[in-house]
Length: 366
Image 1 (spheres, helix red, strand yellow):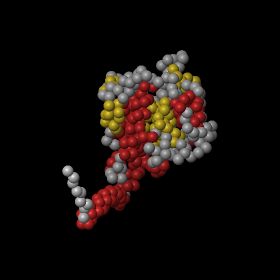
Image 2 (cartoon, rainbow, N blue to C red; image 1 turned 45 degrees about the vertical axis):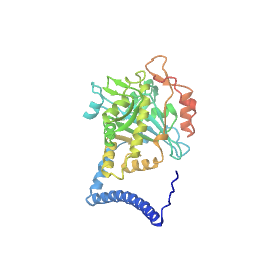
Image 3 (tube, one colour; image 1 turned 90 degrees about the horizontal axis):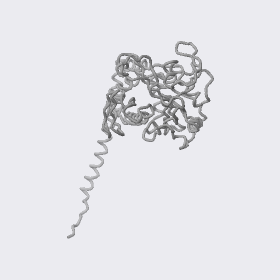
Image 4 (cartoon, helix red, strand yellow; image 1 turned 120 degrees about the vertical axis):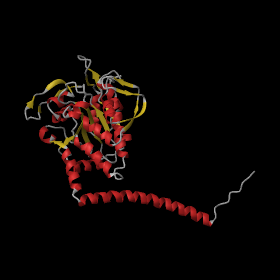
């Protein structure tokens, strides 16, 4: 049996075209309405002086560290290109009631660099690579000037995460520069409470949990598969070491890198223009527990830097753990593995492709 398909007549065709134009107009109208509402809100707030107050509040949240003054001239040269290197620290500071509670209490005082990543953005700023430095890595701490102005002498075989507690953030930057030969252009640090509040402000982050996790130390209990985590759960996820791998710091680095990618993707997908109130909530959470180098220690500077990074797609961001080997004297510690670590840092110094062999670590943490 055959069926004749009669093409639409002139009137029907005009109705279809008209319907298509109407849908396009509706989409443009909705997009235009979002932009208009955002602009109107800003104008209304500005009329009452509220914008200045909000800006001042957010701007005042950011704490700055003058890295250049603290380190002086004895530093590696800047990249020969327009590439940038950032040192990103997650601090386990117990300062304040909320940080102390999130840190697990237990009478622990002070702060350490719980998570450390050197983020390299090559020339063009369309991609990036993050190199995690295990906190248990034994390093040579160079001579540094502490936060109180006193000079702290150099010392060999100290744990990387102890440098922050003993001397301060500027010395962490100097230690990284000395061990890598890489010039650090910017420094960003966020503490426990800030991390938790940022995740809650964006409505949680979905991660694909690689295996069932039961960590009695933190109380974290997750089944394998996609899970949407709130701020407290996210903090436990990136800090767990007893629930994954061999129980060392190396085992959780993969979780930290995976979570960072998921967090960046979630932030990038947020419709900030469509929700000015949500934008302020996220900005407040991100700035109130943030410490940066003095070059980024203002809302304007941070915004400009963020805009310059807009072309970096989190999905294409590469994550690497600094190649390490178990220390021959203390098996609970690791040291930079050669020649892999040297090859990795050389590629970053010269803003060139990182060789595959430079990404392989003898110690993996299971």
